[in-house]
Structures are given as structure tokens and as C-alpha cells.
Image (cartoon, rainbow, N blue to C red; front, side, top):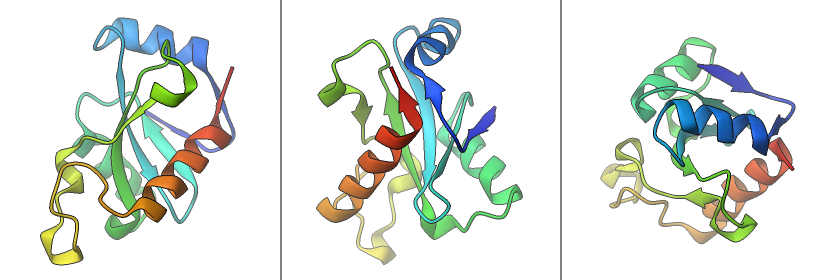
Length: 113
């Protein structure tokens, strides 16, 4: 696992995906620090990795990245760590449109072609 805090190339993500899940890699985005962890087998692994580095759980959101897809299909909001009924998020997605957009903006800033 590694933390992406500057940038990562799509080609590197594609290589990681091929070694893990085929066409997808899991990632956890810290919306406060504007970084993401990649390379874990489960979102919970990446979440724990970021927590160990000082992130706060309420700032962490799980996504899947499809690096070979068109830009509009790069990010999938689907992770068990996103289930937070007490915080108003009742699905594995990200229910708040503004929060989804913030996550997308962070990913756009970090993932380069």
C-alpha cells in the first residue's frame, strides 16, 4: 500500500490493477488531507493505513478506480467503510452530492494521464 499525496499516473494504476483485481483497484480518500491510499486488498486495510498516519475516520471514504476507463467512469463509489448510518450515509456509496464532488476533485488532482 502507498499514500498518494502528489500524483500517480493512470498507467501505474493500470499496472497495479492487473496485479490485483484485473481492471480495478481499491482506494480510500482522505477528504481533509486530500490524499488517498491505494494498493490494499480491502478498503478497510487502506483505511487502517491512513488512520495509522493520522487521518480521522470521518474523513475517509472508499472508492474503486478503473484506470482504463473514460474519465467519467474512473471512480466508483462502493465500499463497506462508507456505511455510516449515524452520520447519514446509509449506503455503500457516498450519498451527499457535495461530498462526492469533493472526492472526485481530489482524485482528479491526484490521478494524471
